[in-house]
Length: 181
Length: 181
View 1 (cartoon, rainbow over the protein chains, first blue to last red):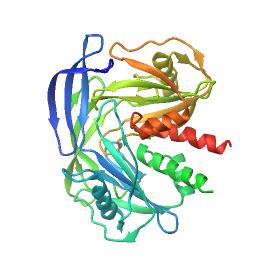
View 2: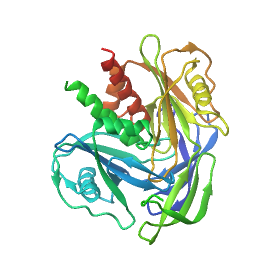
View 3: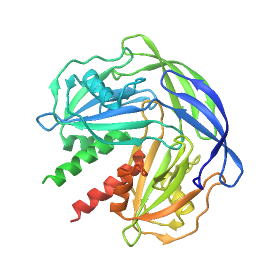
């Protein structure tokens, strides 16, 4: 057993929602004392870094109620039950941007907030885009943008791009350009 | 008014916890229909990319109950009420790693999960470390590691490093080395 492990003594379900659930666990700490951990359960998500033939990034501008503001992000969406991440990424890409692809490459996955949530994001990229059809969710409204790497970097500077997956994706693309020079 | 804005019609407090609160908002969508948004309120956090004089990254290995596993991360912690992010970052760095510094540079800030949470992380870096004293929280247990950039990249490959802020920080450091070459 890992010497840092925390054993669950009991779990209290606080809330079951549309997107997230909340539970509070009483845990036994490595020193034998007890504490509580507040845990948000999330189905997981996919995000896609789509590059057009002109070398532009396809981004979406979206109101985020949690922040009470509109920010610009790479296309993303939560995993549906039983759906594999790659299929989910293709679906979300086309639904949100109107581009489709058969060639998605997984860059990596990462947890967004391991301190309080189990959300895991699978991040894909592609530069093989074809025209498809947008199809937003009933409660989803967004603008589609196509920007250069330099414009995306400026948007990070201006905090219009301001979330973890998108700053990672933009930095990845910058590094890729350096490596290919 | 932004054409994507969602107006709050009412807010229901579901839970007030030690670290996070949960509320559900009924919102009016841009098309006039209503929907609900589940929102986790978080005080915000700081994270630090500390580099030793030997060029190694200082990381912490920590059990994350939300994931039910131990992962390796850059030092981080949540903001205390009224504390400014830079002071918080210096405090967390010394408490968790035993290194202190007077020279922290803010790299950027980002939201971790804008779809359901307002957590904002301020990410700092420093290569000016002096010996200080660790001082863990009562319910905090961790191992301190010092690794090379190459070792950190392997840890990403092996998913021992598996969270957004740390993969971003390692990528930043890699890019910095490329740029200085």
